[in-house]
Amino acid sequence: MDEREHRLAQNEALFREVNERVEAVAHRLGPGVPFEFLCECANADCTFRITLPLGVYETIRADAKQFVVLPLHYTPEIEDLVVQNETYWVVTKTGETGEYVEQLDPRSR
Ligand SMILES: [Zn+2]
Image 1 (spheres, helix red, strand yellow):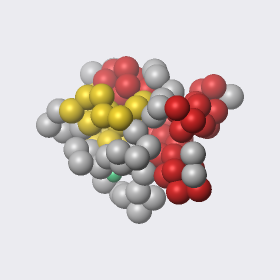
Image 2 (spheres, rainbow, N blue to C red):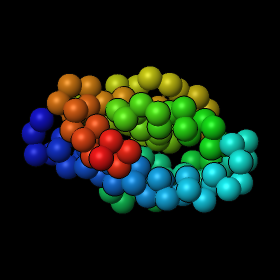
Image 3 (cartoon, rainbow, N blue to C red):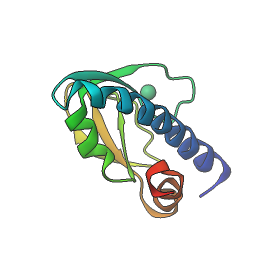
């Protein structure tokens, strides 16, 4: 993992930490209510939101190497595309980057 990959992975992990807080609020509304999560892409300046029911976010989030991003907000050097649909894509980190983001997962601390 080079310096750039490291930084990109860190950006995504940071967005996920913010979403952890969004999720805490969403929990009170129930699993079927759509909620706005931040796009978890590698671009630190991205401020787009993705509307997802909590249950869907939870399914993606259950794997520490997976991130939810907007369609096309995908960085092939550091991730693989696993789910592609109209409103969101799911990416997964492999190799060293995967291990790194697992360490950064607030749920694994
Ligand atoms: Zn994005």
